[in-house]
Length: 73
Image (tube, one colour):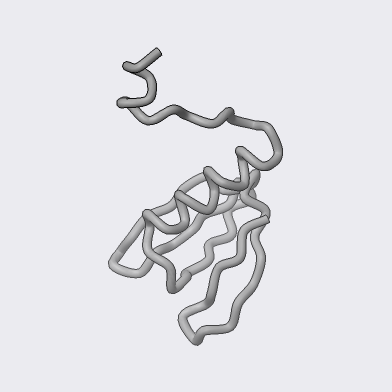
């Protein structure tokens, strides 16, 4: 789950597994796989970072090495 805020500042949680699309029109809109849309205060990059962190925490994706760390090995 990720914690985001409605435009009025009220926080709520979304299950990141069901996120299908994240867009800015200019407000950030998150579309779930069931078609529901949520407009949130956070910018697109912040939501994407939260989703990636969530995926890593549940083991859906591994930790990615930065390019300079990869080149050292």
